[in-house]
Image 1 (cartoon, rainbow, N blue to C red):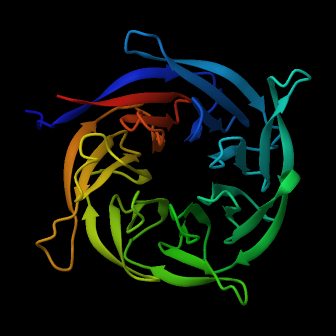
Image 2 (cartoon, rainbow, N blue to C red):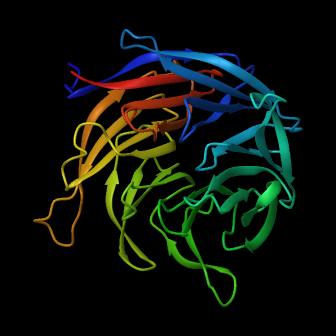
Length: 352
């Protein structure tokens, strides 16, 4: 007998078009746009809108033939929603902006800048919450911090060589300029800027027994979630300015956990103790959704996690490469996934 859960994931869109595996997805924070990238070297942009009957309709708006020579591994929107960054296995980062025609109407997406410097495959790219900084990481074991300047110029502010292996992911704190990275060396590194000097590593988080594939900050910035090849998601609590402690390990996936995303959650935004919802996706083809909350009676405060939804074979027999909550107000119950089947799927979490 299947376990009963309070929620289920309703499939509301299946978005095809990629000719090879779909690696990553990113919701535009200000517009009704969803970006996906693929081993086919392209980026697809899908628009979505309500049909008046309570349904969301997704349509392909455009396909960007990026000009990258190899796989596009990751995409990231700037906080303004006007700029898209692409990280490619050709070692470069593309910066994309939509041109305006003579009448001021949106036109084609053009490459406004190409950031070169990594020696080999770029694995991840992320904008800081202010939009003033961009981070990238690579199989060359480095993390780069770029300053975003006017007219699509970027200046490298630091090359961080702290990891001993391939760096898989980067993620910025939701309000502060703290950068986290996860690596094939099984660790998570945290970096801050020294106003008198350069960016430096201020903390190393150890505990995972294998590659850290994905990291995601909690919406309140007090916690960090990490997904690993060791089949677990770890929850780290910030206990000092640059000090973090693992307070929870979420288990249940039967293969590598490739992606984790921490959203606000829909049901309990008014509850002070609520920490939101964590979605994880794995090589076992399962999406798992956890409801996290702080239990003030425990000391030190260890959050409680309840598995509220579980969906097997989300992409059939294929691995799920990415899972991302929609950050836009009113759409906190939307989740997108991308898989080795080349599909992007959109899900709504519904009460049972």
